[in-house]
Length: 502
Image 1 (tube, rainbow, N blue to C red):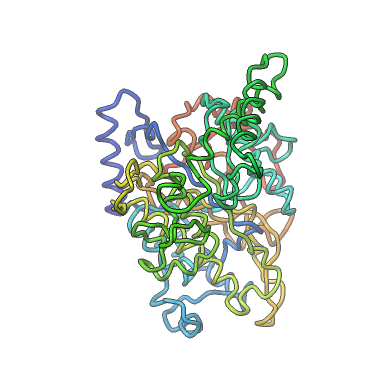
Image 2 (cartoon, rainbow, N blue to C red; image 1 turned 90 degrees about the vertical axis):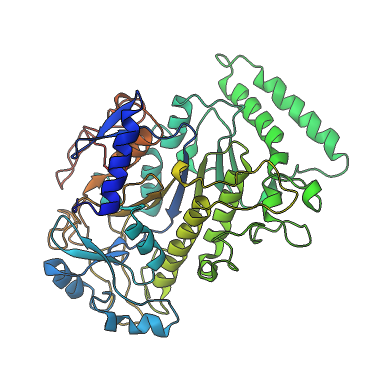
């Protein structure tokens, strides 16, 4: 990793001081610095970039042989290394002022964020954003569907044991009557399933209205009684029935904390109440009722965020409502850029969406907010030291662009790409050597090699944030499957290695 910045040094020193006062502390690998465990009520927000984000144009080289190879392999798509080169983006109306240099990587070259990612670059310079280079898995698969499955179960060559986060939830002791997870989508993300606990999956809060007309209350009570009876089944004999009953009853119990059909604060669910219009009605596109960097009137740039910003408003509202949810999944698509990747600045707009939405959410969580009159029982303090945001995509894109016309050039499915981790307790900086463009994968000259196995990234989240003992993260053990065979690039997975971003 590059030399520590002053802020990173302060964070490590603060972590060491905290650890000295606590009975359970560990040592940050490579530093000799102890650090404390994550908070007992830690929050994790996973942001998935669907389609395979072009990592090489998200964090790109500015100097040395990496820059030379980059411009050679991407004559149309290469991003600028000088301020003068930003003219096309400025002409499109993006707020760009300089190349977003994030400093020297372990390979000796400087790298930069895409020019539209000024918000994330600011978070990086603040010391609260980690760039983990070259993340992927052995025996890379270039299919969207198979690669997504692999990321969900963390098992590159096996059938998997279900979702890795679902396994964590069961290991941590969450049960069917708990509702600790919210997925913003039409179905539960496979990483969260199967699990014994309850996971809400919604596209909008109003989907939590009980689906019945007429005597709704009576029907709701009847279904609740059926679920409750199922939950009393012997789990040793009827595990599926007991699980279905417990999670169903928990969902019905929890629904009205999120949403109540009606009008106005007095008739709103606790989460819904934070997203009411001036006329007292919920719409999933509403701003939050308090001043927030996720609201376009406070932060006009977040308007670029579209559906991602909208979903993160729901996450912020849920967290500040304190209804028991701590683990979240949101996603945004469009990253399968086989053609016309920057025609109309397409990829630029996608990254602008991610940058502004992510940082808007971060700033909301970092703020002390003031609720309107009549709102009680909400969390108004800064929560950022309890929040961790992890951004990933199922794979990166090819080293070379696949066409040469400005209106047609794109990139194809490939392998490793950066993962981003942000939060008040994150130790920002670049982690790992950036994959070298002149040393591609053995099987495909357009694949960037892997620097970190994704299990080391998620294992670090589990150990250093969710307080899972390292002994539970031994490959092939309770939570992380092993890949003992060595792939053509020489990568396997036979030992868990913590990374120093927490």
